[in-house]
Amino acid sequence: MTSDPLLLTGEVDDATARLLRAAAALDDADVAAPSLLPGWSRGHVLAHLARNADGFVNLLTAARTGEPIPMYASLDARTADIEAGAPRPPAAHLDDLRRSAERFAEAVAVMPVEAWSATVQTRTGPWKAAMLVWGRLRELEVHHVDLDVGYRAADWPLAFAHHLLHEVGGNLADRTDVPAMVLRFDGSRHEVVLGDPEGAPLITGPAAELAAWLIGRSRGDVLTVTPDGPLPTPPEWI
Image 1 (tube, rainbow, N blue to C red):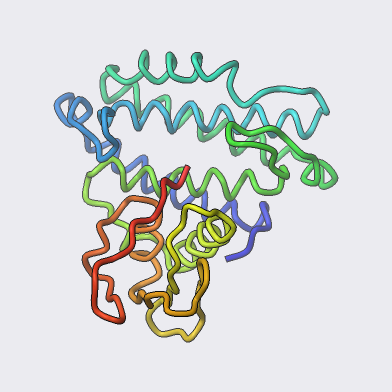
Image 2 (image 1 turned 90 degrees about the vertical axis):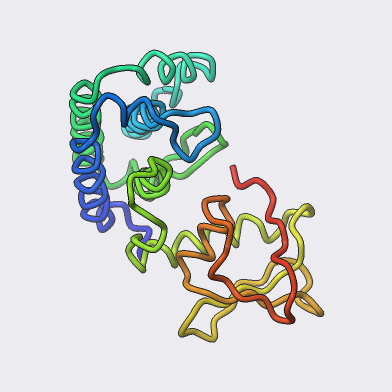
C-alpha cells in the first residue's frame, strides 16, 4: 500500500463507509455495551473516531496555514470530549461520524501540494502531514475491530494489513523492551525481524493476524511458533 495521501483517500472513503454501515445498525443497548478496549463502551469508540477526524482536520489546517494548531486542545479536553459523547443515542453518533468524516475529506481536498511536506505535532509526536491520511485510515480500521460488531482483523484489506505490519514492526525494531522474534506472513519469504534473529522464534501466519497480535488486538491463536513454544509478549503499541 502506498503512503501517498491522495492515493489513500479512496481507502479512507471505503473504510469510512464500512464504519458508517456498522454504526447505523447499532441500537441504544449496542452503543452502551462494552467495546474490546478496556473501560470503553462502543459509544466511547464512536466518539473517539469522530473527535479523531476533527483532530486530523486541525493538523491538516496547521500544515496548510502554518499556524501552530494542536490536534486537541489538551489531553484532558480530548478525554472530556470522548466521555461527553459516549452516552449519546445511536443517531447522534452516526450523524457526528458522518459530519466529521466529511470535514476530514474537505480538509484533505484543499491541501496544496507543498503543504504535505510540513511537520505537524500529533498526540504521539511530530509527523509529516503526508502521513495524516494513513493515520486516519489506521484509526478507522483498528477501531472498527475494537467496536466488536463482527468486523475482525481478518476482514482488513490485505494491503492495509501488510502496511500496518511493516509500520508496527519498524516502530518496534529499535525498542529495547521488545522480545526478539522473526515474523513471516503466509505466502511470502519476506520477514520482519525484531531484535537479534539468532535463535529467535519464527512466528508465521496471515499478515492481518500478525499485525493484530502485535498491536494487542488478537491473542495470536492462529499463529504458529517455530520451534514450538509460547508466543512472545509484545510491548504496548501506543
